[in-house]
Length: 88
Image (tube, rainbow, N blue to C red; front, top):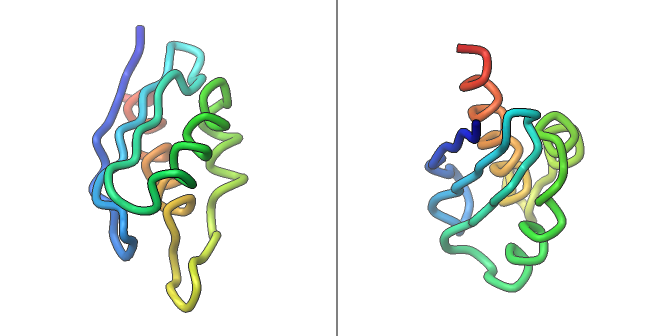
């Protein structure tokens, strides 16, 4: 059983993140809308096959320039939101 969320980003050039994971909390799909297309496609390709908790740990707290967040940090927040769906 797969679950997914559409996460509204905050403080980044990207606008939304769609993330999907299977019953083992393994990411099966990651799409970032807006932002630096090539970089985010690369990040998404690397994220597929990764566990939600692993992605959260690797991406959490990454900043972009003088911003307190980044697209990877926002991806970690989307992963956290999706992980909560499994706890319901």
